Length: 442
Ligand SMILES: Cc1ncc(COP(=O)(O)O)c(C=O)c1O
Image (cartoon, rainbow, N blue to C red; front, side, top):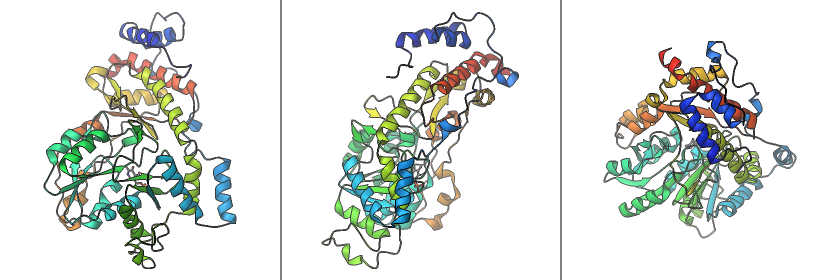
């Protein structure tokens, strides 16, 4: 726990203050000063002083490469070799305790290779959230696979198992949850259900390098999983990805799909006969990216933990405000991480103002707040056109996904320790909330 974190007693008194006197007074009380009596500070929206004055460019800087990364790439420029790829695969297996790993051009190609490796009959269906990046779904079509769109829980932004249970079809063969912005999906419960229904479990861990459930890494709860190293991700290599596999046949098939030279397929593998021809694609990761990923793997967990601690400090204060909640599963046995966003939700009735009014006022205070709405895949034309699919995917109503998009209040994830900026964000929120009656009628 950081020294800057308020104690439980302080947090409780902060909450009481907010209920009674108003935000500025609460802020001062927390700082150990006498509560201010009198009017709260004028909103920046109304010409008052901005709450956030600390420059934030450094706190938003990502990826954070240093001399180690520069040296690793320079070394490759001077002595070109592919060795970093096998090196990354070995590092990954050791770090995450998985038996097989294959580096790919990016997360999308790792997903395509995974769908190929599945070797399911055309027409097989895979349950997947619509609230995800295209890559979790669209490559399925290359192999005659069809998505069954599953809702997300609007509080976790993750695969809603209860919704999935209602959508099971006779063609469903697999489930593919995503660990959205580093919050692990309920893999234990998903696995139990999948076992009961004889479904293959896969994971899209593109956002969750190092997250854990019950002390076990995301990506190791399933038969096959992927990670992305695209440059916004928790482990950035500018572009890149990796697939992890629990059995050799899946690994060999995934490798054969995009590696004509099959560097890590063993001599006795039934796929070895395709060495030299491959199966038509070349998805070899760039060694620069592999070198960057190897550097970034060192210290990954410490970075994740420091980032999560800082988000806790910020969110613990913000969650005292009426109508604000955060992306959480409420589970004590998960170890999450963050990247890019710190996603909050606003309940407009409880907050007493609209999301739009809150965001506008926060932005005026200098907070990089947004009202994000993530593209829902099931609403895109591709899925409504039969010609692209073995059979047309069912286009459902997904109220959880809609609710997430209607209530999200996005904040940036600060990539370095910035206690002063965090305090100013808290002050800005408290100020805006203290004015919420005016904002409701503005
Ligand atoms: C959930 C998810 N899956 C897969 C991918 C694909 O990764 P890449 O961009 O490396 O192809 C992304 C990338 O943003 C993603 O967000």
